[in-house]
Length: 434
Image 1 (cartoon, rainbow, N blue to C red):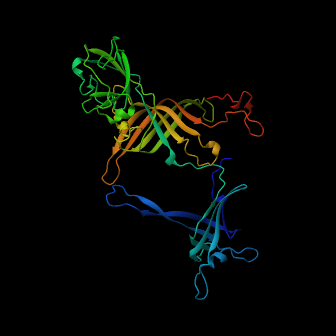
Image 2 (cartoon, rainbow, N blue to C red; image 1 turned 120 degrees about the horizontal axis):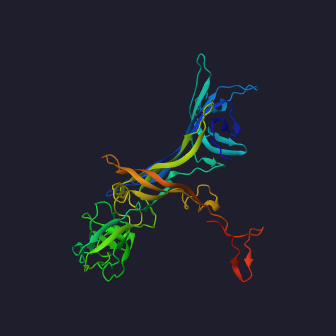
Image 3 (cartoon, rainbow, N blue to C red; image 1 turned 90 degrees about the horizontal axis):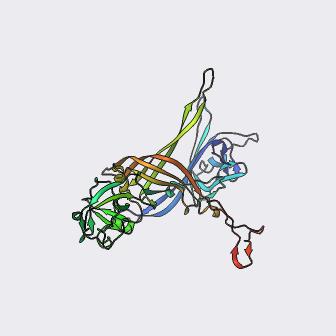
């Protein structure tokens, strides 16, 4: 059962015995890092050093029915008579526990009491303030009903899309440079972006003979767009991002002008590189249906809308597999064909399994939707990294998809597969909904 823990669930123990009248406690851990940066490095590097633990607690000064003081054993580890002082044996065994029924979620450590204070004031309860420093390793004994997931394992996948519009133009004989494998046609700057996969069709059914030895009337290729809006054609996204002529499709000067229609048809989602955060908000609109004479308002559900934001470190080159963050800046400037994209925002990937349950290792949970970039900001400061913030709104359905690992075979009571006579390695398989 889901549960949010409060202070009522907290328990502090000393040597296995629960301390009475604990007002609060806190435990913190820290890791020292050792710098391994050397001459010539452009980025600092570190190695993990020593881990430490420390904390504090506040207890009401309390005497129980047997005349025992709840803070005695703690205070005596630091407040000593004589001149011997604190020795290595003056440690305490502390347990910090969060209780949920029969589940005890414990942090256990051995510590020295490093400070203790107690006083009295008119109109106030006497309290003992204790601080401690852990020594040696801690034990984290926990039986969570629910698992905590970290944002470091999230992911954003984008699929490039047009908003349904097409570009119409003409490829003339003077638009093709066969030697440089480059061609151009009239389109507004920024409407086509390096990495786009486009379909070029001749609107009169003629062959696209500006491509060397090509006789069909349509072709699908990845493109690289240079600074003068010249276009190179490639067979792969990686080659398109790299550019150059070595992997570009060979061209030929066409015999006549070719009227064309250009559509972006990217069918593959790619991970957006350098993402350091994202958010997706959904909101359901309601309509007031309160009638006269009613004492309480009533409402009816109507439309659901969504909006969100992506944050990424800016990058424009060097990655030929993932979508580069500079694409968001280019996408926000598209006017004729729109700034639309299809996104998958992953909450859990199939390589991340903090639950520790083997059956959940390959589960995937993500939002799937279409969106439109509404604004894009580049944050540039001399004392910080260059970052991009892109705001978007969703268009159409917002789906939360869960690809869960499910059994694919009908099993016996012993959990063994039901094998088939004709093939000892075959098993009876379940038909499942996908």
